[in-house]
Image (cartoon, rainbow, N blue to C red; front, side):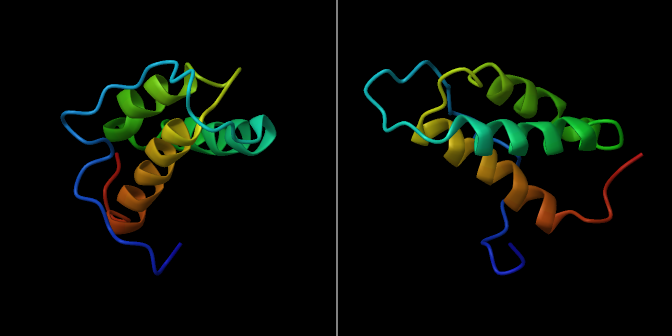
Length: 85
């Protein structure tokens, strides 16, 4: 993750996540683990609360587009290690 491209925002301003029924499935366990880690971080990182909450809505049937959004949040966190409460 240290070599990932750093993102300036946790979510693209014009992105809108939906059920994406035609998208490729991703493993639920992996997706839920990533969401759990991000939810833990929201206690000290209020800047990601909205984005994480939006991604958490799709834990029952995550698709590739949802995983991409979650990875973007992680790339944002890599680029902003000193931000917090």
